[in-house]
Image (cartoon, rainbow, N blue to C red; front, side):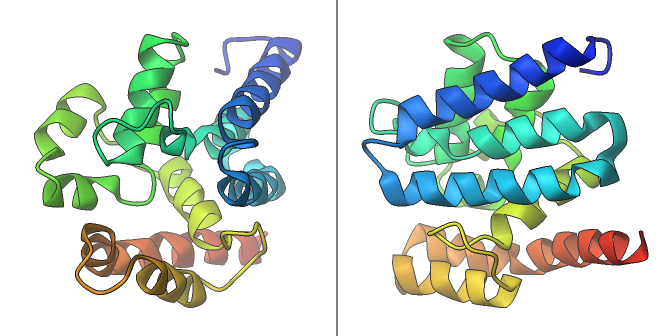
Length: 191
C-alpha cells in the first residue's frame, strides 16, 4: 500500500469502513459496534506500524465481515470474510491475508478442519502488523469499549460456552493472543 499516494490510501480506508458498515451495521449491530471499536484502536496505534498504518486500519474495519449473514459459509468468519474480499471486492492480497488470519484464526481453522484451506489460500502474515490487529481485536469488547485482554478472553469463553469450537480454539490460542497484546502494549508504552 505504500506505493499509492496519500489520497488513494485514505480512499482505501474509507472503502473499508463503508463496506464493513454495509455488511454489518443493520444485520449485526453489536458486531458493528465491536468493529468500530477495533477500528478506533487501530487508528490510535497505527503509527507503530509506520507506512502500513492505513493497511492496519483497513484490516480492522474489515476483520469481522465474514460474520455477515450473506457471507457466512464455512463457520470460520475469518476465511469467509477473506474469500469475499478477494473474490467479490478484488481486495489487496495482504489485506485479505490479515483478515483471514486475524487473532490466531489458524487454531480455529484446525479445529474446524479448514487449516489447510486457510493456509493455502491466505498464508499467515507475520510481524508487527499481525500482532497489532490481534491487539486491537482482543482489547475491544463486543460493544466497542476498550478492555483488558483477560476480560476479552473471558467474555468470549462465556459467550460461546463450554464445549464450543470457538471456546476450545480461544483457549488454545490464548498464549499467542496474550503474547501479541504484550508486544504491542510494550511498544506503545516505549513511544
